[in-house]
Length: 314
Image (cartoon, rainbow, N blue to C red; front, side, top):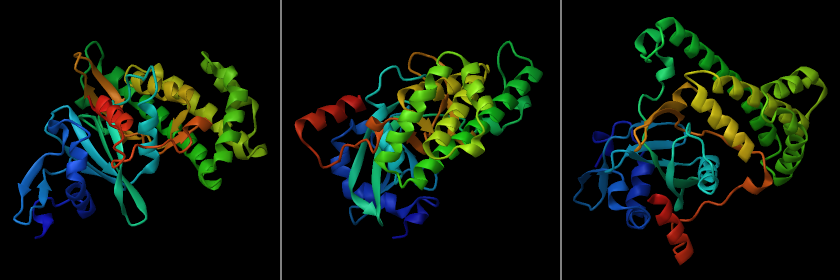
C-alpha cells in the first residue's frame, strides 16, 4: 500500500521505524504521548496523523497529548544535546522543554535514528511576518517593527558567528581534543564577558581574527555569539531567546543553527506565553563533559535507565 496516500509529505523511514519500535517506544512514555495513529492496515502496520513539518533530518508529529509533540530525527548532535540538557539545572524559559529522548536500535543507512518528545510550539516562523500583522500590548506598530528588525538582525549575526564555531569543530573531525582545546580558550576569555556585554565587545575590538586560528579563533567567535545574544536579551521581542542562548553558552553549548524558522511561541501550563527556540539545530559543546554525551538506548531496559526515561517523560 502506498503510504503517500495518507501522508503526502512523510518520510517512509519514519513510518517504518515507528512500526518496528512501537511497543518499545510505548514503554518510555504514557500512551497519550505516543504519535497519533491514523489507520491500522490489514497487514497490522500503522499509518500516522499528518506530520507538522519535516526537515533535512526528520519530522515532527502530533501526539495524543495536545501540548506534546513527537520528533524522529537522524541528527545525533540534537539528540546528544537534548540528553545533556535534561541533566542541566536552571534551564532558560526561551527553550522548549523536552520530556524524553532515546536512540532506536535501527538505522537510516549509516545514520542512527533518535526519538524525542518535547513541548509543543505554535506560530513557528512568526519572525518572517510583517510588523503590521503582530500585536503587542503597550507597543505601537513602529516600536514592534523596530524590535522585530533588531531581533532578526541579532539572530542572524549570532548564527553567523556560531557557524564559524561549528566549522572549527567540523574541521577537527568532531574530536575530543578539539573540544578540550576550545574549552581552554573559552575559559581564558570568558571572565571578560561575565555579566557585562562590553566585555565581549572589547574582545572583538581588541583582536584581529585574521591573525588567529583554530581554537583561539573559535573562542573569538563564541565572544561574538555572547555579544549578539546579549543584544537580543535587551530586545522586548528577543529577550527570552537571547537569555536562552546566553544561559546555554554559560552551561557549555553554542546553538549553531537557530534561525527564523526555529523560533516560535509556547504556551506553558502556568499560563505564561513565551517566545522560544523550538529546535536547537547543531548544538556545539564548549566543554569536554558534553562531548558526544550519551543518549539512552531504547533497548537498554535496566532499572536505572527505565526510571530515568519515565521520570523525564512525566
